[in-house]
Image 1 (cartoon, rainbow, N blue to C red):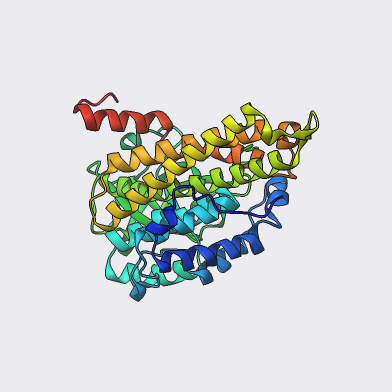
Image 2 (cartoon, one colour; image 1 turned 30 degrees about the vertical axis):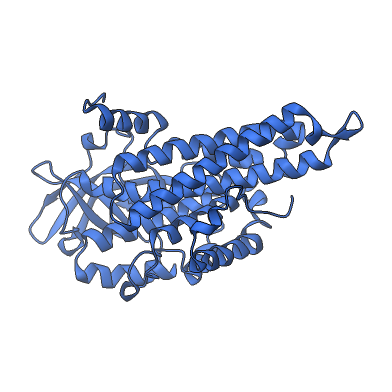
Length: 389
């Protein structure tokens, strides 16, 4: 494992404020101290270091763009992006937990919830005192969430929820879940389900080769009685969960750059040290080609993410733009990780180095929050006006 040096070939740091840099430094130091020493073993053991949740809460990682009055830090969206970059440099599983807590749980409660819901749930979520999950994907409905089968009926004093959700980050450890389900009119609504409600279970999914430091599972609802005050009152339809996904995809676009930079940093240092034919392999043309192309693609992704952050801060970012940057940056990171592995040769598959772990993680990141192909079709729809779905 080599000391980490941030990649900044085009002085992107000049586009960041002093506050952004202070935030980045704080998260980077924490990742170096709390994540790097334990993450390889956690991945090998298929364990999520759940104790890190409280530490992340103390750092202000959860809901950084949520107003201070609700427990957030009141930061801008570039700050959120910078945090995601550093967390994913540590591991995609750690970043996933933070992304879900922030963009898929805190964001919908803040954006679509009642004042009572905001005050009840957001402060403890921000501190990491409770953990959240997001229930949208189902066993039979992934890229087509509008066809979801989970539903709830009005029973007078409460709602009766039935159905199931699949591939849910934080499922087994979540204290609450923001679940999207259809009402009796077939309209998609958001509802907050709490751990301990009778009929609510969350079995874990094992056997993953990817995101092994992240808890993944199901949410199963068998005649779950949910209080009526748990319904999110300020949104109806698919735009609710899709707005949440836009926030998460934006964070992923920044996070993937962190994984790519970690792989590039490892490959560069190894190439400078490793000797073959009596000289460092960094002196060979094909190695330099790999490194130069990796650096170029990382730089392009950094600039794309930064510009997306500016647009988010100005309230101008479109869902199609966010799809483009998520798709591009994750594919870039996966390509960089694979090329880095080539430079390390056989050593690249060992847990002496982080590259294979990043590769396996990114195979999930390129699929979740909208698959690589779906994001391509979103862009196609935006530029032609024709839906190819």
